[in-house]
Image 1 (tube, one colour):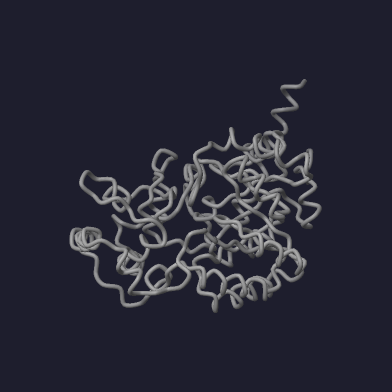
Image 2 (cartoon, one colour):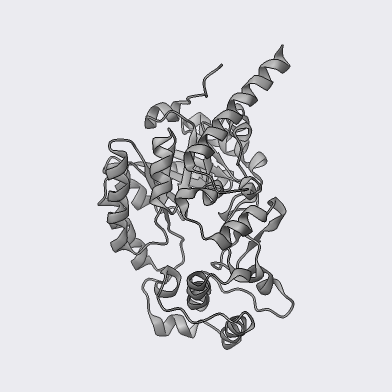
Length: 366
């Protein structure tokens, strides 16, 4: 049996498999690393003071193996958290709409804060998150939204590899010029903040920009099978970046309510909405996204004001597991989140799919 392709970026990072996994849960990153892939820990939702402990937890369990962290650093955010100034940007009609949602779905008040109810995305927050990450011993720093050249320069000066998720060929050129070592071509199919171009169309466009400059490209967006990973490599990618699939991992500790929603969802059950963060974001459909799309609903506010508006309600929904409103960022690969499995089982299935795709290709050639 032919081995799974080990691309140059795998050699560079010291990993066995061309499988990259993004997760907010350290246990998923640890398990994926142990299974031979490359884990990337999402810390954009974390207060800066929590980041060192999370990184140290992963490092303790994986030893010298390499892993990364992912930050979200959008431009145009306020310089600092000024509650009065931020409150002044939230119209009364929006506050009334959110209060109506709480009443309509009988959502009890939250008894504890979460990130969205206690933090507003600001340049000051980003600066503190960056310092926490640069002060840790992660091997790679990824940026999902926003591309501060100064941060990339500092990361490279500190000996860290840098990665940028891009949604257009123009974004790819800008990321390379800023110093990104690896690109992820993230198509419209992807969960979370995503662009307008589908993965199959975007990937060759980004490769066309990156390949002449020696920058490896990973494919992302709607990928949930080994055959898709093999297909992406055949197109010129050096691996695949998966996020949604790990929501069904046992190590992710997804709530039973959310897991049931994900397992019942198909690719058509995701929607791109601004109701989550203020920027276009693909999520699994729920009463939350439906309510914001109803006739007469106000337009979601731009980031960070949408979270300033909805943060308290989102914290309540999460704490009390309010079934109709529970949702998460999820891509069209949610089709393959059918039941809870371990990360190792998911990786084994992906590897089996890669090998089957290779065998099919050989049979066609014969």
